[in-house]
Length: 180
Image 1 (spheres, rainbow, N blue to C red):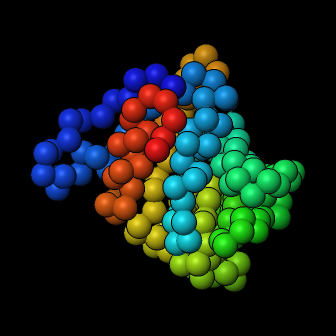
Image 2 (cartoon, rainbow, N blue to C red; image 1 turned 90 degrees about the horizontal axis):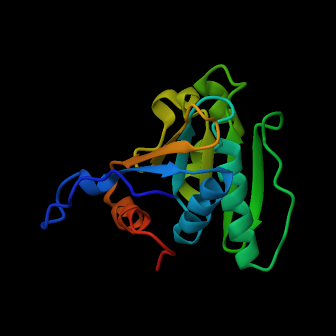
């Protein structure tokens, strides 16, 4: 990952500058590394909403994050894209991880049928194509937009949140090296 574009923090900690971060991800491995750095900090009720065009790396990010959480438990599992199943659920010890690909959905009523609203409260949720959620998107979610560069190898990762819960995680992501 290259140096982030991030405004300087207000010493009071009361501004929104520490609730957004932009990173340049050099390749697919850097995208996986970002996922692995975030994975251990997630808990029940956390949602990451992933946007970007087809091929931007959304599923790769989710797969890497899920595999990192499972590896913490000594487990290795195949993590397929939920493009056709819409939702894949993983038992990650004390919490489930829901990986949802909403690309094929046509409206929020289908989201209610899937049980995603309940999962937003009780599980770690990774949601691709969050525009399909409309007003059902959790207010406390972390938004991750992945945009491919012209060389199609590197990506721009833009992270933003409104909930202060994400501020320490984003600050740590802005620093090079492993997270505490």
